[in-house]
Length: 441
Image (cartoon, rainbow, N blue to C red; front, side):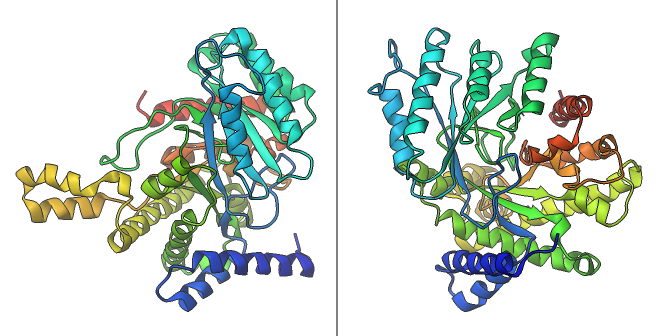
């Protein structure tokens, strides 16, 4: 699609502004400002845009995202003065960015008062619609909670586009065919209802401890630990000019190097609404590098999505991309230090008795990244984002690519309207099976 001159000018102005933020702490500021601005002025990379079902929003807002877990005290009932609701109000009040997104997990709410909590939260959202920053709130709930139907009904009955729901699909959802079919129907028919598969989390390296995923990141749409701060960055493969792809891996390495450095700098520029989130952003430096546009890339190069050779070729390219992401994170760790929560000094001390100090430091230096997560892939990224003569079902042959990811997300679901109900369910079931295969289950 040909962009209009005004849109191009706005994008360049936005890129310049964001590049200036990212280059503030650089020693050679002019050099990196130029790199960042050129990269952001194109289509390939940028902070993850908010997807509202009608397509991603324009511009480059800094995409910091986080989620809360609403856990009422014993005997607490929903009311405007309840401690849990005041906690939510405090987070919403602390947001000063336009187009902010917040996740709130409701899985700890008692079923006896669930409807009352939903109504109280809905009223709170309504009070924020008049003259305040646009805040999207994504309520998540495990499907083994008895209130899942109530949450679906609340979303259907609320026209507010900022009121969204994500169901964290547990294995029991497949035990009841009627329940599974209702979940699929609800998500396929309503862009404000998402399905995310529960329990998909693994550390980036063996040095990292696993974390319990108990909520959903509102932009990236994957499970993560509550009260953790994430930056979402999008690498759109289909936007890389064909002549640059043909140059080989040199351009890819430079793209990833500049992109990871840009993201690392932006992590320190997000306005977080609480001290806990600011500390987590600094200590863990969580980066979700979303690779998108795979289906569009295959389409542009006239490859057959049903061919095993196409799958093999794209898989090799993605694995190279993933290795480069980790390599650049390790490079930044050597320059700036690994993420503080890794506590590399203590890890060295633990390894010294077995390996000696010099070798222990080499081991940590080669395995201590700067970021806690990197490659994020969604099953929706294998679908082209515009109509094509190739039937949608054919693109599902590329789904095995998601096994490469550090985080499997459900981001980019706006393209699900291209799938009929049967193919949408096939995508969900295939994704579930691949996740189990990925974990050796």
